[in-house]
Image 1: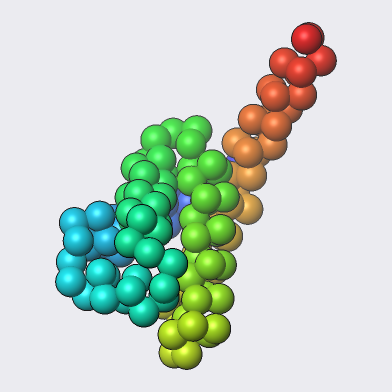
Image 2: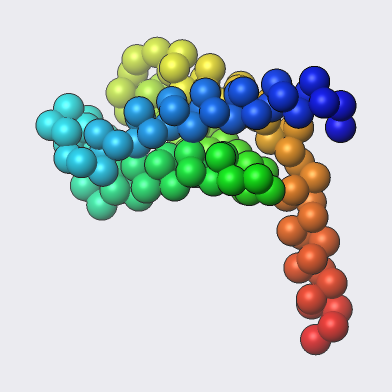
Length: 129
């Protein structure tokens, strides 16, 4: 990987980490707006904690060398769910989660070797059993 691409990915990882802490912390801290939002969604408050935990936890993983690939896989799933929720339940614009999804997938593409490496290690471990 070129040095320039690596720098761009790190800048995006830091920006995404900040965005996901900013998005996840109110969910974990019980901000009334988030409580109301998850009441509207109708799954339950436990899902607010799961979503906030995935966002904040993945934000931390984005900043740990070698873990960004896993973080982006998790965040891609979260953002796809957010987009579907905005469209199907909340009936409002999914622009914010869509932008986060695009940036997350860009980092995922650049850090895919980390994810592939985990699958490779899992296959090697499985073969040894």
